[in-house]
Image 1: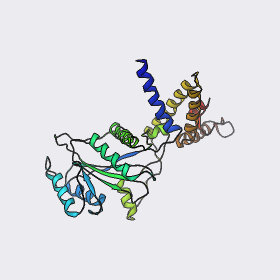
Image 2: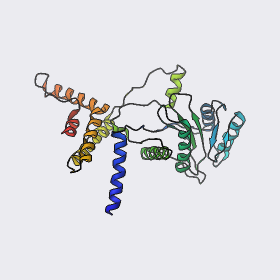
Image 3: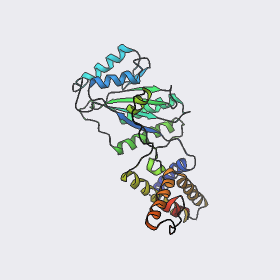
Image 4: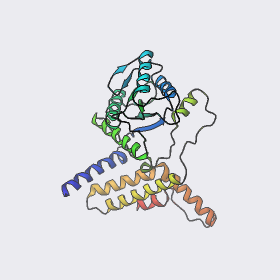
Amino acid sequence: MNVLLHRQAAVIRRRIEATVTRRAPQVMVKVTGGGRGMGAIAAHFRYISKNGQLTFEDDRGMVQQGKEALHDLAEQWRLGGSLIEETSPRREAFNLMLSMPRGTNAQIVLMAAREFAQTELKDHFYVMVLHEHQGNPHVHLSVRAESMSGRRLNPRKADLQRWRETFAERLRGYGVEAEATRQATRGAVRRYDNLWQRKAREDGRLRKASEPTKSGKAYQRSRVGALEAWAHIVAALRASDQPDDRELAQRISSFVAESAFAKEHGQQLRREVLERSGPSHAEPIHSKGRQGREIER
């Protein structure tokens, strides 16, 4: 049992060091939408394949190209199980995007996406297309909601996190450093556009830009909780008699203090004190916030 716990602790430590020390690239696996009927699904096929100009790969491993092959694929989905009507009140497909930062080998991204789909989407029809003409290599992957055994896909937050971890693991298997650390754990505040917003922006049809950062009670709660969790980890590492543990505690402290949310949270605390006490009686608060100060001690 002690050996098992030691191995588990070593794995956790490596994951922390990858995020905190090496700042390993973070994978993105995102649901960008879904087709409510075969008309929308076929339109998405045309979009991701540039109307058949790009090669696309299905769940059988067949790699095809061209409008005729694209039409045959749509018919296979339409009839492969419960009939998908031209329009439907429910999602008949989910559109995913698996992405890595600029500079990552695009073919490795494709191979990792293929293994991800074989693991997480088995028993489903799916099709994927690699895009490498934009800044970062990414794979568009569309999956039929109904599986071949009749079960319907209904991804939740926990599923998305597992998908990210699977994709990152497959990338590491090809020698690409990749992590799937939660945004809250990293103190990230950035909000990513949905695919329809990106399309609208490209076409000049986006009337109102989305807020660049996240907000709301759930957002605040998850980030503050992450800061407190980091504080407990730092306290435990600093109490260790191992120099490496104490050094890691310091690196974690610096990582957290530099995070966007820790800085934002510190500004928020200062505003709250000013509102309660007025500027002449305000208690000076370090820009890293209460949790940031606790981590630094």
